Amino acid sequence: MRPDPSRVGVIRFPRSLIFLDDTSGCLIICIVTAWHGDYTSHVGLAVRDAKGTLRFLHASKNSRAVIVDRRLSDYLNRYFLYAGIMVGRPNDLP
Image (tube, rainbow, N blue to C red; front, side):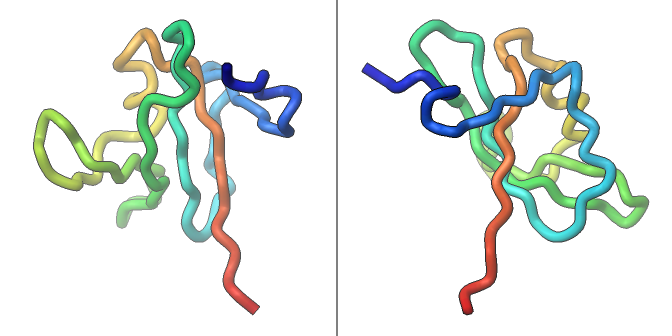
């Protein structure tokens, strides 16, 4: 049995509240699913393109390659089972 995310210090952002416009560096994005019994369904990175748009870099099952996909918010709205995201930021080693 998986622990309740709120009990292990995990904060989920519903897709309606996602606006990661003030980010710098690399963010690890875990797609939270609404599918019963699952926790996350996909993992990738948030990257900015040359125009400053926040996009989702991930291994695409359909493309069978690592791609820089559409705007992150558009990607999340494409699938109704995507409930939101969890965000992680890698730290440099001392």
